[in-house]
Image (cartoon, rainbow, N blue to C red; front, side, top):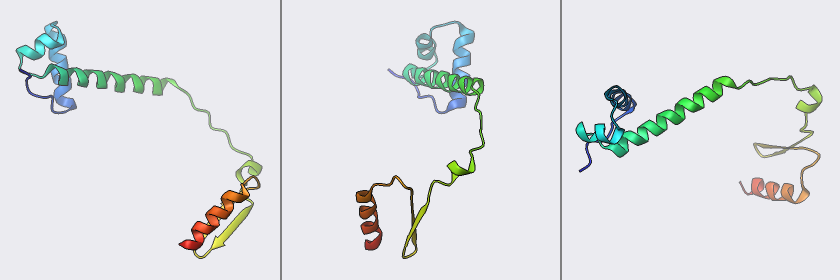
Length: 107
């Protein structure tokens, strides 16, 4: 028979610390203490994944580069229909523009 579910992260961390200090298998400890082993195991997996994600994030570097003004201003056309503005660049597809204008007109 399955035991009680692990309620939250604090409960999971408390149980996992007890498992570690007991030097028993997770399933054995859970059975002896009336805890659902599957619930505790999924908490263990999720906490390990979360911890691995944090370590990877702290180890990576991000370089921020100021974009030249020419790259920042790529929207040469502004189409105003009613109270809506549609900004398109030079490479915008004519058929797509027609569909968007039709949708805007219907609003």
